[in-house]
Length: 333
Image (cartoon, rainbow, N blue to C red; front, side, top):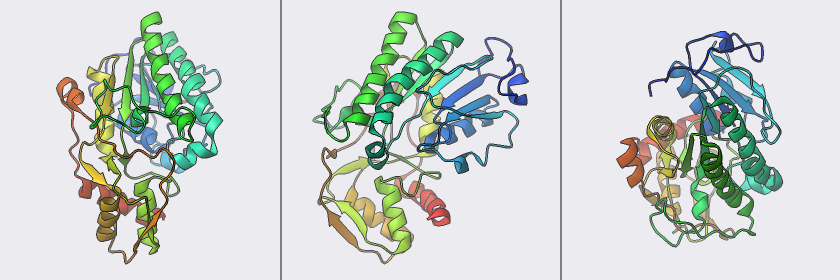
């Protein structure tokens, strides 16, 4: 992505030299200490931009920022975006990635999850409006719920249980999308909405609770891999570098309508567990447990729109990506 010219010269903020430099566009990323957020911050810096990351560390980790903290164009502010956010100086992009993103995380923080998808989204949209910046919302494939259409195109409205245990996350993201469209229509904010399907890679938390980190940590430790139900439910796994390239493409060439970002290669949870056992050389066995409430039976993105509009599609194959992720988990699990 070629950085667009700044709307105005930067002015000092947070006392950082990064914000005093003119001529470089600037992005703010909420959830910047998270798994995907930290990779996005790194990608922006590699594109010659200035970056301000916001995070309150409910699910993010300061360790994800270690590779960035010495870079002169990087700033960090500990902040809760559910409260008013004031940032001095210019902004070209406002990206809202702050949110618990796995069932254990939003089970532990249901009210915060709802707030960050509603109040947090409104605050970040307000910031984008004030700065005449492009706003990008990190939505999710969970807006499709347990889908009755397969694969899922952006035109599908979903099959979501609003009062189930996943409702705090699913409905928060659906509301966030409505907020983005409302600000586009009422205030002409330049908005983007991406629906992220299952993504994996370095900097995921070992205790994340989703299939890839669960299976990898269990395989590395020689523990049974816990497969829920009979393991026939499917997911489509995208490696983080592909997801990040998709985000950059959406910022450069996208429009206001939602767009799926994910790998359309579908795999059952039983196949995934067996693949990770094989790749890790583990002697772990597979142990079946009761299927969680409202667990989607199928999850596969229709990425026709991303291919057509953006010229984007994933390039990292399943086993290649899993090996890279496994290498990281060996270093932390």
